[in-house]
Image 1: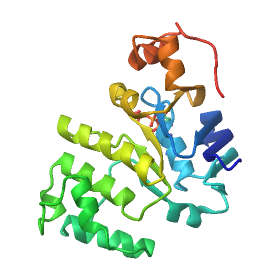
Image 2: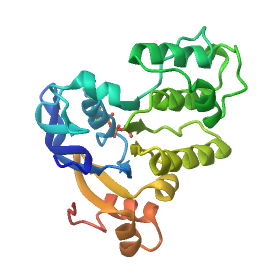
Image 3: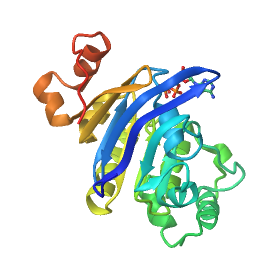
Length: 247
Ligand SMILES: Nc1ncnc2c1ncn2[C@@H]1O[C@H](COP(=O)(O)OP(=O)(O)OP(=O)(O)O)[C@@H](O)[C@H]1O
């Protein structure tokens, strides 16, 4: 681990019932950048995210988050990261701000910024409305607010823009770029909406069958495939770009 890495994964492996779903996986997410994690359905993105955030224990290999080991420093890692992994669960009978208050109390963090974060995600007008009345997109916005309300150093976001309307997607894009530029955050994000990743990411990691086979800057993607990230990704999937290339 060096001090420029927010996430460093070395030969990480995860086995379920004797079946290796993550195999010798290597990743390096540099601090202060946005890393787009791409892969087909079932490639292993969520499983890697779960190991980084302490929800699953690696079978073998090493993973460090903000310089801490995922096996031994789980509590301290959790205090310093914000996550969206799978469908977010909320207190359904409580409002958006009450949900954030509870999260902050759980994280033992200050709650002065609830209104400003709700404004950032476009939920400032929901007042006392319970979350049970929220649309899918509103729930996703609240999940993003909860991930960042305690001012984490690293955001791990598994498909955070699912369910958002075009306006919401653009707002979240601007929010993510602002968090990295002005609040010193690092973002590790997965999405199947490749045009969105292309707008925001500095680096792309492509996972195929549990192994990251490509880790390249977006500049390199554009040099290698001028038609853009979607074609680059599909070329990898169909074997037209074949060689393993990582930093
Ligand atoms: N708890 C589990 N037990 C057994 N197999 C699992 C478990 N969790 C995930 N898997 C398997 O691991 C593989 C990777 O799944 P994962 O959810 O990490 O993929 P993903 O890249 O996030 O996919 P998607 O894009 O569809 O969300 C899949 O084959 C999945 O069936």
